[in-house]
Length: 242
Length: 216
Image 1 (spheres, each protein chain N blue to C red):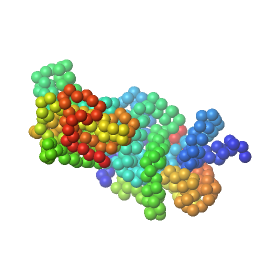
Image 2: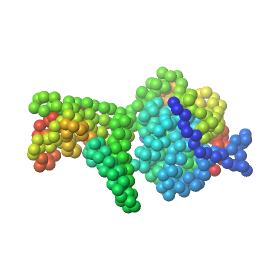
Image 3: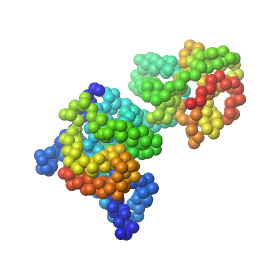
């Protein structure tokens, strides 16, 4: 038996993916050097191509196609989006866009419609994070030792983003700001400033921080307005570790 | 579960009917669909999702036993297809088998990566049966799903295998177990696992040959 016989014997196992991980890597490396095996594996894949259809199909949910298409087509904008989103502000923009469209013609109308569509997509995107969350965490916010509103975190696994809602928090005192932080295994990572209002909750859609360390939790602090340090300097208002 | 909206398909092959009076399954104008996808036609993407979703959900749900995770994999598959429209199926594969292969591979990657592996084996042991039978969707309208006759043919080919070969193939192909894991699961030597798989796949290749012709 030659060394190549092993590859010949295991072509079907490679296609089925029943080789051990080390064997699979070895086989894959071999494919880069062996035209014969590459051809035969491709032939086997074609011959067994319909085998997955032995499984009974599953009827998608009624909105499945729309959800899939929307998620795929909106992706580039979604991945880049990390601007805090206030629902009320969005509605105001929609209203403004609608009013503008009513007054304008031609180009103005198109611009307004695009703006409205963009805003609606943003709102829909925010809602999708909340609806698809696989985990929801709630924590109380404390100011000067007294409960003052709360913070909700919706973890969404598909796009690896969080929907964060901060409610019941008064506007930050003059010269201060509310700052949201990710807690990672390698330390705190600054996220966005939270624009709080007693009248309206603050909505934020946040991507995971661009660090290799896993995210372990989140914190809300009150920082000096001009602060830009990489670690919290002010008072911790809320803190949650998973 | 509400019934899926009937996808658009046509069965063609006036001069090339497969044995048994079956006709090739062809996505409605597959060549045209490929061109439209390559041209970033969003409606083409919607059509592809409509046609392929029941089968992609079927295989991923069967392997992962988790509706949400199955949907995530299917989303990844369609996103991958949309991102690679220029080389979609590289001209040799029909679209659906190509998507199915990606879905199955990604499901296996997830099983192995996420350490759900052991729980999956335990579940399979507890059932004493395999996912394909467990996930049968009673609500599905067979006439509304394109490719149902392919499903019947493939399922029949699998069922025609000797039970020990079928079992080995189901564990390897539909649950992503490796040789050593199958040997442990069935309490048989690894050499026996390899033999059963090899014999089983050889028979399946023969049995599925007419379907392979449908692809071409």
